Structures are given as C-alpha cells and as structure tokens.
Amino acid sequence: MKNIIHIQDLHKTYYRASHPSVDGLTLQVGQGMFFGLLGPNGAGKTTTISILCGLLSFDSGQVMINGLDVRHKLADIKPLTGIVPQDIALYPELTVVENLRFFGGMYGLPADELNSRIAIYLQDFGLTSHHNKKTGILSGGMKRQVNLIAALLHRPQLLFLDEPTVGVDVHSRQVILKNLQNMHQNGMTIVYTSHDMKEAESLCSHVALVHHGRVVCSGVPADLISDASVSNLEELFIKKTWQG
Image (cartoon, rainbow, N blue to C red; front, side, top):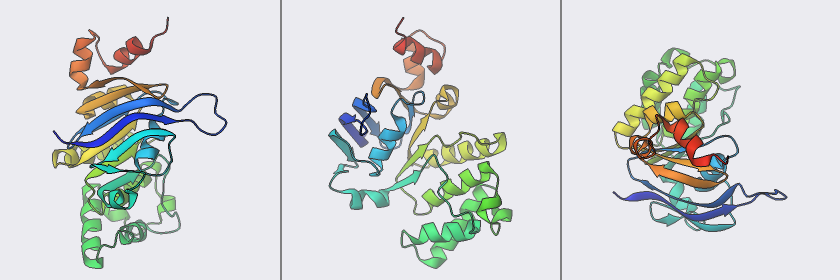
C-alpha cells in the first residue's frame, strides 16, 4: 500500500512553552485508510494536523504528503486535501448555499459543476430544505455538516478532520459518520483526530495512539487490542501510558 502521509521524527514546541507539543512523532498513513489520530486533549493531535495542512510551521523532522514536502510544495499539496477544522469556518451572515459557493469558488470550480456538487452533498446530508437559511441560525450540528461539505466540494484525495463530532447532537453525529464511512468506502483517505476511543474503534481502519506528542502504538484497532490482551482502545491507551 502506498503511503500518502509520511511523518518522520517531527518536533514542535510553541513559543515560551515548557514542553514540546509534538516530540519526535513518526507515523505513516496508507492511501485509502480511515486513520484515527487518537489521544486526550493536549496530546498533540491538533498541532500535528495543523502541520500536515501547512497551517503551522515545525521545528524539525520531515512531513510528506503524496511524496511532496509540505515545507516546499504546499501549493501542489493543497488541491489534494480538504480540511475540516475544529472551529466552524463559515460566514454566519451568508446562507448555506452562499457559503458553499464561496468556498467552492476558491478552488476554481465552474459554476454549473459547483452548483451540481452542492445539490448532491446537501441531499446526502439531508440539508436540502435548509439551503437558503443563514448559517448563523443553524444548529451546531448542522453547521458542522456544512463545514464538512465545504471541504468536500473539490473532491480531495485526502480529508483532514479535527474532532468532527465534538459537541454535536446525536442525529448530526450519525449523519456525519455515515457520510464519512461512505466516502472512505469510495476510496477517500481520511485522517481524523478524536479523544473518543469508542467512536474511533468502530470507525477507523487504522489508528495511532498519541501521548505527550509521541505515538505510543499504531496499527489496526482489532489487532492492537488483541495483542495487548485488552477489551478496547481505551483500555489499550491506559495500559500503554500508565505511569504507576
């Protein structure tokens, strides 16, 4: 399997921080994986995703996407990727369709093609009846769904999601997860951060457990659980990071 992401000995310490956020992190993500970067708040997940997306510089190490170095080839990498940040990145005074046309237009999609894709995604997410509502009045879960659609309009090969289901209602969570599973089955590589080990265990084909900016173990969830003689990923994480 071809690696679409390669990270080697990555280090990042924020200005005036007493400890590194990423401390020698090394991992590979194969093309077509649904990959979970898992760990508690402060483990370095968002920092790692931000570096992969070219939003944050790093101190040392190597970061490659599709064989391209993020430090030197970011302009070539960006069309290949979609990014769904933890914070909602939409204009609340614009309608759902206006937001999606704006973000889709940034990728240079022709108007007819863009409108067609918007209609398809709104139908897939059950949001067609909300298309002319201002985004600011939508529920938090609906905003997250629109945020996700905005990252999908140019049909990226690689999708980054930072805690995509945090704080959403049960219905929106199921809609988001169902669509992510469908996209993965259709060949998209997905990298997803979460501290919800149970959700990740049911969702991800591969995971890496991260603690204090380092990978403590990685692989197929069922194999990791079996090899460690534990019942689930949460127990595995506790076993791997217990200092007592």
